[in-house]
Length: 146
Image (cartoon, rainbow, N blue to C red):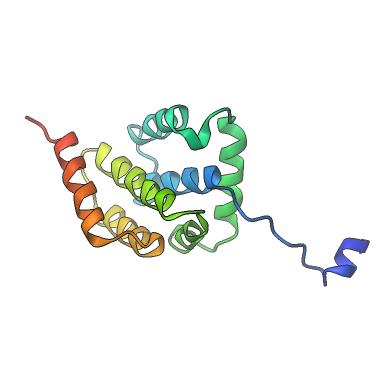
């Protein structure tokens, strides 16, 4: 047993996840909500990673590994939604909800598992119902087939 383990009671303090890792975690949660990663969803995640200010100058692989660490702290995907509550501000929490909803709708069909995941995210992220409704209305327009 090392000195650090002796001093901390065998439990090393966990570093709080950063917003970039938590945002990526939220997007990946939505991708896997239905039990599999949809081919159309992963390019969407990568394009957001390339465009959003939270990811500027960051390496996708490194942030991805941090997101996986977040997931491993919980017994299931559904439980790991709780980690999103650690996002630093309501603005970033609202953005996480928007990104998750966009990914869910990008595949063309939101199933029950994705819908349940989005509802859980809304609760954990404290996204107001009126804002969630607006986001979903705009995304419905974005993905509507004419």
